[in-house]
Image (cartoon, rainbow, N blue to C red; front, side):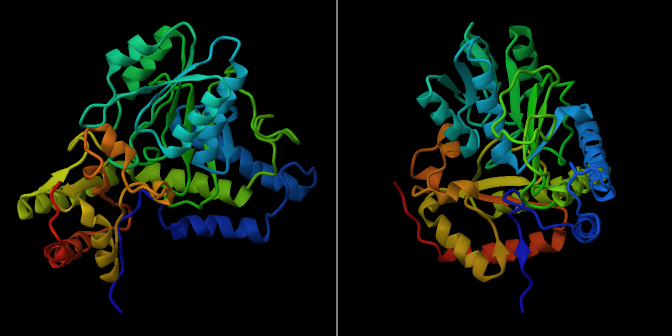
Length: 386
């Protein structure tokens, strides 16, 4: 049986066995409800408290500023809807970038139906927002700016510190979706003047179905869920203690290994991009070639954009998993990426992005095997010009 190679870590990561070891006893013997007063509940509450403290510490936050959720989509919905509903007496204007994740953009569509006005910030060809445009867009009715820390499709890292400074000076709340960034590059909410931050577990080798929203102390926000008052009254439901403990352990491992992993994964990325641009004259990189997450590469071939899905299927037959952009966006009928269109590609070209995202368990051998597979598959594709 051929070795299978997974190069789609931006979509999700496999569960690290070290994290599973932490979670299993909680399923089996520490299964109590953290709101119960008996010893089973106390044990669960202790795990929950430690996790709040641990994850908060990794981003410069206090334990009570961390609210655990079911993942990035819930956290992003909570941030935007919760801030909008709690602050509509101050204004009804929200600013987001045009390359946000679908859960942000679709939340904005819903908010527009509720009477809010949304400005969508354009980006340059690298995917970076225009800071001058942002400053001009903020007005007296602006209550929130939401710009993702790094893009999930092209990996471009936004100028978060500068955005935070502008929002702080203008007295506007700043939210950032850091699902692709947390655990991979340093993130500090105090240093960057971030008021709300979305993070999740399954992008960092933890379990699916758990995430968190950092909410700066004193921020007015309306809960999405009402019930027993868990998570400081902000997210009522029985907490997913095994998942939360796994998330905390995943965060700990990423922080401890980050410096080494940034260097190692960047070298793997550069090994592939060097091959790609040398081997194929019609290849091009989407997004900023340097200001990007260590493991992200989004690339296309001039004239072969219409063959992207076929290439992905051919690679999959050889045991290699890559992506045609965001996994969530693949649920749509159109294959055109809103991110690639925003950086200047036409509708045809925006269907041609191929994303590889490297992770903890990828090796030089994986890259070598991928390059061999590319040499085998690409010549079989049909050139199409528009």
